[in-house]
Image 1 (cartoon, rainbow, N blue to C red):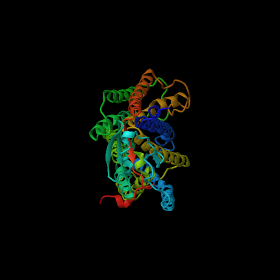
Image 2 (cartoon, rainbow, N blue to C red; image 1 turned 180 degrees about the vertical axis):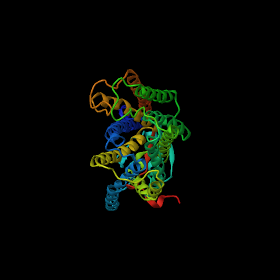
Image 3 (spheres, one colour; image 1 turned 90 degrees about the horizontal axis):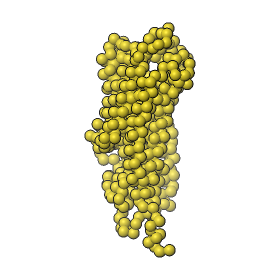
Image 4 (spheres, helix red, strand yellow; image 1 turned 45 degrees about the vertical axis):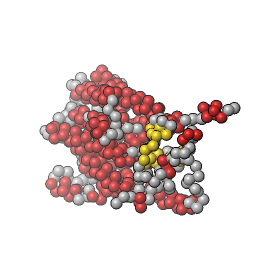
Length: 433
């Protein structure tokens, strides 16, 4: 067989990166769907903290505990890094990093890339020592980026912890001032903030498909909340009116908090995408661990202020059942937020933001099978209306449109990120002071 026929059968650089990008994309979507399931389960489990005998409305303390739980990520991460450093020191005398042409792979090692004969003179980006480099090879734009050092990771975690805390505290606090319906609607505007900020920061392209998808998802949320706000034909609950339509004496303040939460959610996913770019660049468990540590230490002085001013008097969960609900929610938050960050880095900020609205149709399924809190544990179509079904369908359509567009983009294999790997982790000496 002639050499030319062999070359025709060899996979091209673009086809290899297309397969790699699609694999990352599918993993990211799977992680996002897992987060949707966990957050929906958390909503059902923790709803008891809002009403009933286990009522315990402490938005700042709940958010503080959720953030502090990230600190446990420091333990396995530090142990793994220490073990990896020892192995790297032992193997350094036996491995020559420049023996073969290679690129960073998802496992932190290297992915061989078959170069065509006319490209063999080009040095692969992973061999370069620039802080950042872009090169086009065989129709593929390779973005060569160095791994984040421990110090850089800590710096990113510092600002991320602040933005994350504000976003989560604002949405928790807004529930005390306005209705759940208003919070749901205003929180869903995060898709618009994410798309706009992503376009400004050049991590999102503004296309008609994305805009229509975000609008469809938002309109779907409007339809669902409209359905929840309709008068119920069933006898009123002894505990009072439905939480979805209950009003507050300060709805404007609550709405402002919900809108603030939506904006800060967009800020933290976009800035994280801008600073990290790819999950291969950073130890995400270490980053979350730093974020939890910073919030655990620096937010402690706020508790006396909230307690003595009467804004949020300090108290622990009142019953063992409330303690169990809190601990379950903390475990869900610990895992779901880590998976959410990975899903965002593997896909796009807008996709994961709109994807979180899938909690609405999933919650409707929970209501249908008797998990709803307002149904008295009865399954069936109680509480599910034509409006809510139409709204859930629009949410799914919006997510499907975004997902399909991102699938086609990754299938092209025209762009990829290469992370330099001299060792398993970056060295602090590489940080620019």
